Every structure is written in C-alpha cells, then in structure tokens.
Image (cartoon, rainbow, N blue to C red):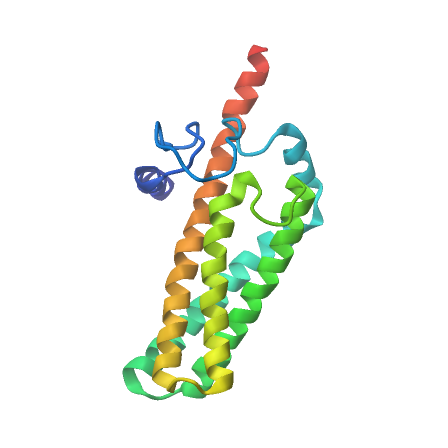
Length: 194
C-alpha cells in the first residue's frame, strides 16, 4: 500500500524527460542535451552499471549520507532553536559535507564507467546540474566557517539551505531510480515481441 501511494505521489510530480517514465515533458522544449531513447540505460550501459563496483559503492554511500543528514539536521535545528550545541552541529555539517564530496566523486567515476563521461551524461543531466547547487551551498558553509565571515547562526542557516537543496537533489535521484526500476519490465516485454 505504501509503495502504491509513493508511486502515485512521485508520478504526480514526475517530470522525467523520458515519456515512458512518468508524464514526461510532452511538447515542452528543454536545454538538456540531445534526446535519448525512451529508456534510461541502453543494454550496454545496463551491463556496465551492473558490472561496476561503483554501483555498490553508491548503493552504500547514499543511505549513509542520508543517515548523517538526518542526525545533522536535528543538531542544526536544535542549535537554531535553542542556541546550544554549536560544536556538535558544526562537526555534523562537516561530516555531511565530507559524505557529499565522497558520493559526488565516486558518483562521477560511476557515471564515467557506465556512460563514458564523468558528469552531465544525458541520463543524469539535471540531477548533476542540481548537484552543483548542493555542493556549492555545502562549500559556502565550509568557507564561511573557516573564514569566520558570518555568525554561527548565519552559518547554520547556510547549512539548512544546503540541506534543503540536498533533499531536492536526493528526490531527483530517487525518481530516476524509480524510472530505472519501471523500465525493466517494459523492456523485457519489448524483447519478447521482437
């Protein structure tokens, strides 16, 4: 029941450019790179994805980063509300930022192994674009922290903005994973036809 509810919720906001995976953009033109076929992975890309050790690395790092994010979000909010716990909140944001850099670097390696380019492969173009906003905000937090250019309260507000962008980006990737999962049965049935 939860899965059906989640699928309906995602489908209602799904703007995946591949019309086989949600509503798609229809006749809307976009600045994205040249259009790909209706599936997320070609058979060769799927084979490379399944064979890559970086697929497992990403599968482990993503939930670890989410767990760190949840703990850190609680600490940041605690500081913003109470004014206490600055050191713990600061350490947690730095750990979250390190997790983000790690998943970004290993994700670029994964993207190269699967699609032949480190970033902005057509299948993950918009996710990669938004990832740079996420990285930019996390990096801005570190710069402001190290330089002392802003008060602790402002630093934590920057961290909070970084976390909002992270949630949006994580949602993009979850929608893409859903699209990849949904394409598998339809591709198998197409294979039986031809």
